[in-house]
Length: 131
Image (cartoon, rainbow, N blue to C red; front, side, top):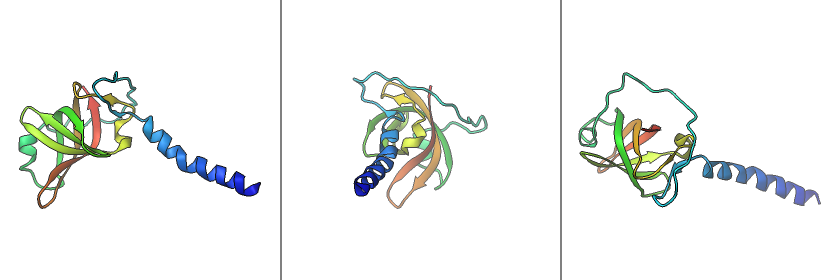
């Protein structure tokens, strides 16, 4: 009896973060209605808006702000972001969505850190805001 109760308690503790992550907002399929809430946060008025084309020439770990659309999901936390100058891969942790639901038709502003490797460039998104 004690083993069953302990197993049930462990299962509940392990599954709670998974269930919370699933209901925390994120990218939605265009056929699904976008519904969500904004919980607020800090917006840096001093950050300068840039473009995907310019981002690719910046140095590693640069802080960038981009406006455009998230076209599609290409991995668990990886997405394809597009603005008028091109596309770039972005990584958005589940916690960064803050309950917002975003579809490819929604214009968003993302802020994050540029991550350049030997043959790839991506933005590690720290804040996303639906415009």
